[in-house]
Image 1 (cartoon, one colour):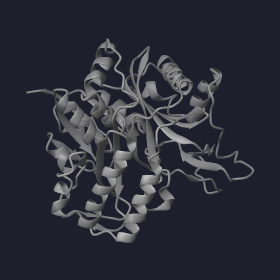
Image 2: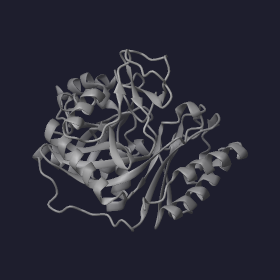
Image 3: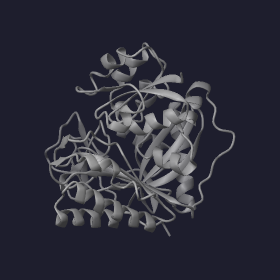
Length: 391
């Protein structure tokens, strides 16, 4: 039997697939228990996330574990799980400074990197226009909204809005140094409810920025690694507007990691485990052709109450460039605004990814009986958000 590995998080299907391809037997705990996750190995459904994770983990035999998003917001859970299991990832102590936006800002400013302007809840801006409210326990863009007086002082803070391109960077670290795996565009604003306009909706990889901007991102990654001792895979969220502004660090396997695994054609969990256990990085740095193929990931949120049709699983099987993942059980009822599934698309260019997306979307909308006018509007909005490579 392959070595067992416990994976916990809000949604762990992608990490579990990577672990399986890397030669591990995944055991999983998440909020969905989608059908393609349950096919990989034993699973438990978290019904009181994240507080029930230690109790659910105790039902499995002792084995190493890693976490996905957004368990990093709950350091006590990481510490509790680590008492009886080997942690293949970053400790609560490692990530403490990274998850405090003010400490992260101070670190960046002390090394002359650009930062977004921040304010505590008790020090609001004089004019709320051009400001956001963000939660300290951030994840997937949830609870981010335009600034107002309605702020929770202990849970939220103000950040000045920076208009630009949302960029994600994926790194692999060994505690003292890191390597940039690649840059991708992060997609937001694709939720049917405009109140969730900052919610993470997917990613496009690779994404090319000017050389100096990429160098700055690498320098920031190295600073974070040296300062905190991060190990394994971690992601950074930037806004690029002439220069990259770091907004957040995600110290674990990220939602966009599977795009890089599809581009590299190998599971990055293998590198993650070696980096965590042995403190070593691969001997050769792998590079992605900036003019090579593209990979697109899109989380589909339902615009109306939707009962999962049995045909959903197979509706894009004749489109070789498209794949559905995170598939719920047929017959399950999904409330408006909740995720239906994930659509993975590949193509020689971002433009051709958009073409495949349109074909697959139309199939899904018909099978799920979505309102055609509203569905078409959502599709057009999505296509507009998928930007070409930076000139």
